[in-house]
Length: 138
Image (cartoon, rainbow, N blue to C red; front, side, top):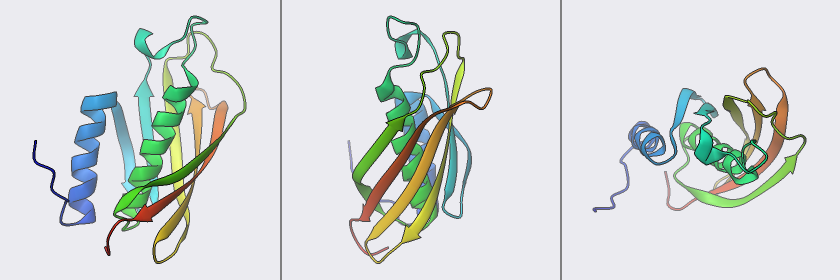
């Protein structure tokens, strides 16, 4: 497997969308101007023995959606830190998780991003703050 860095933000977004669909079945309805909206249709592999999504599934969706917002704001790098507040559990029978992420501040190296994950009826399940860093000049 060859690892090459995409040559532009648009290339990075295209590559990331494909990889995140193949690896995690996350799709994106919006990725532009420092914002992103990611969605995950839940199935049995995402659920714990209570019949609700594992917390790590929510965090994975949020981290990857924040990463897409980062790329769309011209970033080129990786997550430095991520903090989560789980506000409520998903209801048994929840079918879809939706994450909205927005770049709040950009610096020369660091990007600060807020995100939240909701269920399909709009109940906010968790809130996140992420810091991403550029690994090279954009």
